[in-house]
Length: 358
Image (cartoon, rainbow, N blue to C red; front, side, top):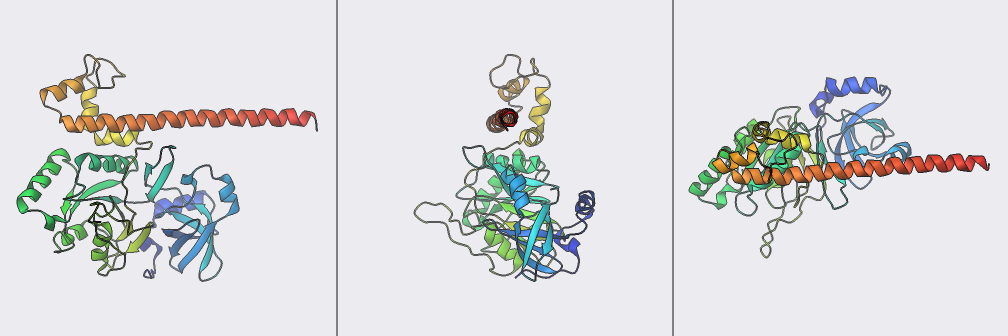
């Protein structure tokens, strides 16, 4: 059971959401925050309590994509039917959103919304990978969210190995905070707590088995979230967390636990990639061609920087891969919208033809 709150602001509500509630003429409804997402049912919370709610049939009819449904972190307008049930009438505009492409059908998965900081968690042993960090950073930047690195399970390596990894991280990611932690020894937990502010929302992202749930349990001061060890046979983490859920710390911070993600597909993250690789964007202004793709074109300033050693080659390669994914998503989305438009014209024409014979 999550704690009760006297002020809606303690759940992360502020003037941004209130102004949109008034603009959308939703004043007659209560507001609540989505704290758990089940299959077709959502647990929402406000100062009156917690409710299990479903969206209205009208919302289902008008929805055109998964993004039109509530997600953990959303603020929604509700009617409280009784002390346990409610109806969700509308989703208030999202200030920030973490999303990814999660299958070959180019579909978008909303991971969390209205998040202030994304803690990107990797364990020092099994899944430590700089390129994977950059993938998470790109989707965080695209969603308007500040990323912070958590390097977890540091008790499993030597101090020399840890120092080398931290130096590597800080060299490649100059402007991103790095926290080193171990729930086994308690190292770094106090530093992690310093990042967490009352009324702000934080989500934990990373692969299975990196220790996201254990970190949240440590912050909560209790073993509330079920955790499992890494499988000895495969070395892979088990999905102890099966759904997204929001938790409230005694300090007033709000944290979201997420199931592990083995793949972080790029969605419409063009701006996120450009922002994350700002130095490459700046270098590219000196390229001979405006539409230079920085792969093989003559007069490419980016390739020259890689050749001279001014630009890290691994960082450049990851930039190219992420940009390709974002470009591909954008292209297929345009094609999809084009097909939808054509289908709409077909339906409109068919209706007109049908009216002639009515």
